[in-house]
Image 1 (cartoon, rainbow, N blue to C red):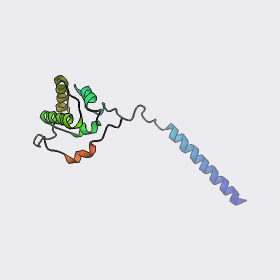
Image 2: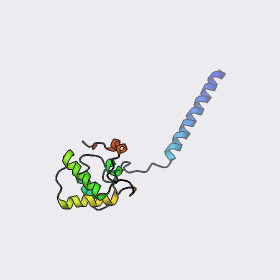
Image 3: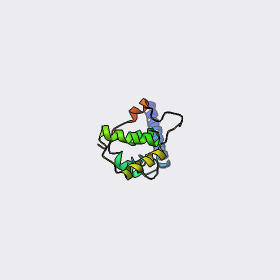
Image 4: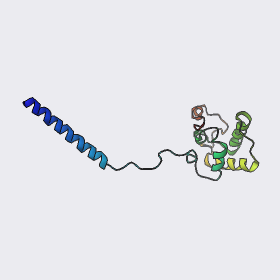
Length: 134
């Protein structure tokens, strides 16, 4: 009989602990509401021309490669030409190309001017992922 009473007490203590824990969890501060992920355009730094990057660059790859690349305006121009010649980027009217270059040169300049801006960075290759939307 005593054994049965011990089991009942243990079960009551466990149930009480469960209720107290559940109440504490429910009373805890709520997690911030709203989207936890940022959109592709939000991942880019603000600036004039950001929309052109969204229209002309994001259809083929994620913004991670843009954020990981730091280059001079001349190198960005070379990269756009490479995208057109080797990867099927459509022809850009001069004003759009200029807006892209202005934005990229202003928001993604070389990290260290003493570094060769045209140097390839093989470590960044894993960051070049296809656009996850298609």
